[in-house]
Image (tube, rainbow, N blue to C red; front, top):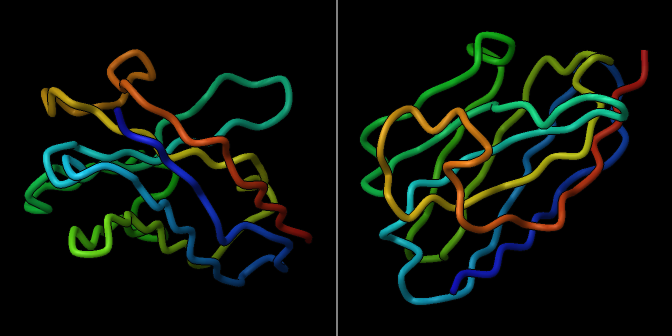
Amino acid sequence: QVQLVESGGGLVQAGGSLRLSCAASGRTFSMYAMGWFRQAPGQEREFLARITSSSRITHYADSVRGRFTISRDSAKNTVYLQMNRLKPEDTAVYYCAADSTGRGLGRLVSQYDYWGQGTQVTVSS
């Protein structure tokens, strides 16, 4: 069992930056691939980024590649999403998720076993 708690969301102007954190409970955190998703009102949950358990491989959605960076600190049981050059269309609830299998690119919601409660990010124009 893994419990995930996101933090770091808030209101920011377009062009600004935020760093989201996802703190995980459980001693097996280092075994999970981790992902970040977001969901805007009326839209499906969207894949953003993924990092393998070893941190050697990362994947990004085209919409955020070059602006967002995923990283993890296994000593702190925490995964991060650094978001730069934010745009109004980045406004959404952001979720972290844990994948026990670590297989594939991890772009599908169904591949993840555990989810956090989400943190709101609002980007003003």
